[in-house]
Image (cartoon, rainbow, N blue to C red; front, side, top):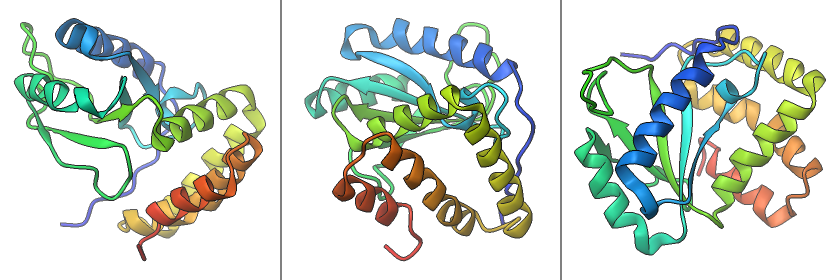
Length: 193
């Protein structure tokens, strides 16, 4: 079954849902982690996005990864490796109630990543988020691009991602990313890697 690329208008609910999720991660992971960040398009007020939260859990370094993964598995996640992106481990929800809590709440769809504090992936996510938060014109332009690509590639997520990567790379270049880091980001988001 092909997944539909769905872009919707911004919802303030995304920020509230992230806060509730971050509270659970902080409570369950404690000092194993440095912080939890809402990243991706749902973290930018006013930006159209896929209605799926992107969340980065930040660890000091990779030596903390096994313990963090074990704790997240207790909450109902499975570890899916890095899925081709360096220094970013993917955790997948096992059910709509993941993360498990005493309320048996159904959570909004989300992508959960664990990143060492110095990873390019984390720096990429934060730089893009902050640049778009600080430049509503660029955020609007990005939202329009995403809508156009979703219309052009309605069931091809790989093509959707690949065709928005040049826009992201231009933002990151303006944010001071060097050519080596940019090439790594572009390569890892290419369907040809």
